[in-house]
Length: 172
Image (cartoon, rainbow, N blue to C red):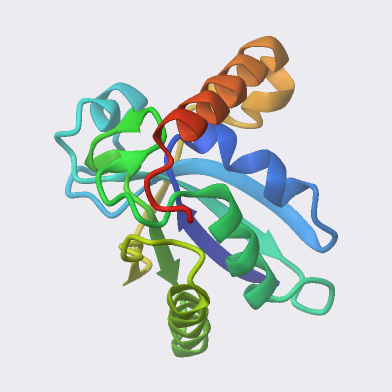
């Protein structure tokens, strides 16, 4: 098994698209990249810990490639917005691809270059690619949020889509 770690706004909306893929063993919501040990949701949300909300994905590389997960990641985020994602604003919602190996780093960088060259976005791609550090699992109520709170999750997704439609600055 291998791991992938992505930050792309509120982790509530990042879990379902990855869980639906063949070869995914688990998707955990949590926090990474900050300076506070064992942060809570409220601490991270306060924008004072340096963490991003992220999803840790365990996957079977014989069934799904890291490259395909990176490709799916791009579809879940606005890679032109460094200060948040959709209506989730602030440093804890910034887009980051974290890597666990030189191979993952190379795949992420190549994928980012291809996205930049594709012309899909008018604005620059600002998603960063950073070495993975300590990952802290979020509180239980944030795990598989889309299953536990389907009504609120649908509302969150709808608001995200509305915000994207009204504010899509990067897309052609």
